[in-house]
Length: 345
Figure 1: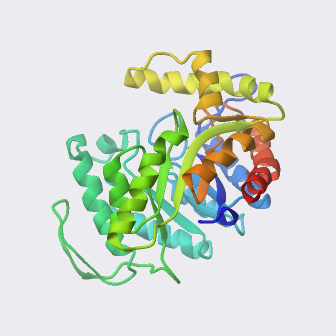
Figure 2: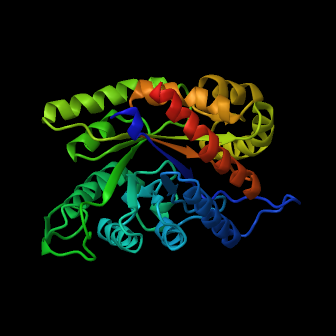
């Protein structure tokens, strides 16, 4: 990987935003806003736009591929993908068909990031047992990897009947559907990505990004042992950009805390303090501030970890649509050029 080839993307979960009176917007309006945000990203020349899958009230997107197909019709260059697709509670063949269809209508711009997901609502919703959490992902990923060969599939496992010389349509028009493995910090998942010869997307959402250096090293060692060239590594992390550091922090803080505390109550975490928030900005994996501040923090992370893509999760709970549009604008117009210049220096 050379610094000239680093890609920069944006991620959103379709977080339910509020209007000026503090009333949550309807899910339908949030989805329409996501499309508009992606159109701006395309106009700015940003490389990738990712949409996460959730099945809960505070995130509007439950079917990323549907929204991405709508975005494909409004954009021309930006690559479009999930962030992530919860493969464990889905059917690998249907996932492949949906993304191969997206790839067709977008003229080859589709990508998929496969993961187990940090939320588990999809398991009871679709009738899967959490006790099979590991087995479901491992076997379904194995099947999905077989589908990527773009040829008749022969596969056998314990979670479904075997497939014998089964053709799956639509086929990929040219090349292979770009497929990443999303990893939150499991060494086994890192090795699994290398085993299937797939790019690695690290979800670094807290703590110093440099603590993931051992996972990067492990990924490289795994490919070395396999005798194959290493595949790309990406990072997904949250952030928010405004005109000044103070403005960015003050605008993001109440929305970020509300979202963090809501999820924290479900998981037994204590409420987030302002000191924790500020420390995460200064020393952790929260990229918040002016374009200059964010670029200065991001460039050494990209260089040190040797990543090929950085994806900024720009939505944060109730943070308003207009503020997110401005964040996207500053990211595309100022942060990305500044990081590229720093990497080239």
